[in-house]
Length: 287
Ligand SMILES: [Mg+2]
Image (tube, rainbow, N blue to C red):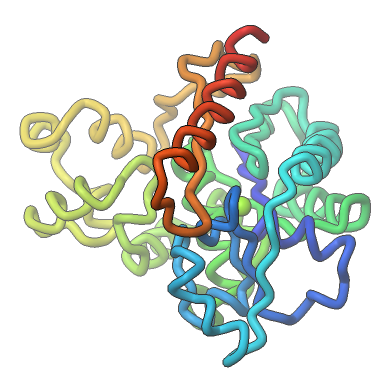
C-alpha cells in the first residue's frame, strides 16, 4: 500500500503559519510580479477564484469580500516543504517527494492500521509545521492520488463523500461495493494524468466517472486511446504500473518564467525584463 500526503492550499497555509490572523479569511498567493493566483484558501475558492486566474480579474474582491492577496515567498515555502517532508519521511522506509507539497510513502512491510498511521502523519505534520494536510492511501499511486482527492473533497465540500473519509481516506479499508460507489461518484477528470483533452474524448466515448473508466474494456481502450491510459486503468484496478521513484531524476528543462503584473508597452521595459530572466536562467544552467 502507498500513501499520498498533500499539503492543503500549501502556499496559503505556509503564510497562515506566520500570520494566524489570515485563518478563516479568503486569501490568495500571487505568482511572481503578482500576475495571477497560484494558491487559494478554501474561503477564496468559495468566492469563485479559479486557479491561475489573473489578479486584475479578481482584484475587486479585495473591497467586496475582504480578499487578501499576498506576493509569493518561495524561499519560505521551500523551507516549510523541507520540514514537512522530513516529518512525513519518518513514517516509511521509502518516500518519493513528488512536488513541493506532495509526497508518496511506501507502506510495504509496515505493520498496524494504515488509516491510524495516516492520521498520525497528519497530526504530526500539523503539530510540527502548522501545515494541514490530507492523506490518501491505496494499492497504487493512481489510487493513492484519488484517495487524497476524496479526503480533501470530503473535508472541503461536505456531502460530496462520506464524512468519515475526510482528511484521511484509505481505499484499502473499503469493501468492493463501497469502492464502486465512491468511484461512480467521482468525475473521471480527477484521475491522475487525465487532463481536459482526454477527459473530453472519454466523455465522447460515454465515460464520465472513474468507475466507468475502471470498467472499460482494456483492448478497446488501447486501440482508441493509448497505452498510457491503459496503464492508468490497470492502476485504478489495483495493479501497480507506476514505480515509486525515491531518487530524484535529472532535470530535463530549465525555466525562468513570469507573468507581468501590468501591461508592458515599451520595448525598453520588455528588454529589461527579458535580460533579467535570461540571466537568471543562465545562472541556473551554470549551477
Ligand atoms: Mg496541495
